[in-house]
Image (cartoon, rainbow, N blue to C red):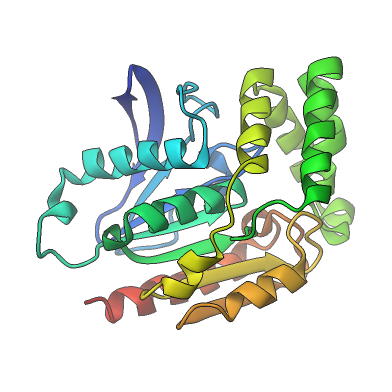
Length: 277
């Protein structure tokens, strides 16, 4: 694994580059950094993984435009930098697969909407194309208030455990404690920016309907953030969808059910690249 960084609009953005082959970009959600995908770092031989810390997370600085569209542009620049623009020449086949977890999925959809020619496939891992409901927006406002009034520590302790399934809470409480420690390292500014960006993102269901590439979906049976019902609805929107339910996972299936996640992801990646144009 190589640890790298680019300067994007005068800000340092950190990412990991692993392996060689067709390019697969893995985007994390909140409150995580690229380490969310650590169980996937070395299990996809024949693929080149690019795993950034999104702006404001981990070792990456906050950028001026922390909207989904702004962060999507940042991700695109990482891809261009890492591939030396080879995949963007006129007439080249689609060459990149992007899988986004939670907020990373919202960024993936923004990327797919603006740059469909970039993608050979994309995926939503515990994520959604729907905009926030009014109830969800109200919840985000409460989260912002919590961060501003009681700090990141309180946010980490109260929010992180809700991301995991009852099975994980019983069998692997150390995993949750580890993530609480990581969440404590976020700045309040980053967390508030993320909540604002997610609250104001637009509905991108049409991106799924118009997609001409295979779409990957994975949801946890016990996910309290993305209802299974929403995921099932969205899985039927695209022409070709790979849909999976992780039976013992909450919102963090790539950690909670790592082996199953690796199996379904490898199947999707292999099939998608096999039938690439």
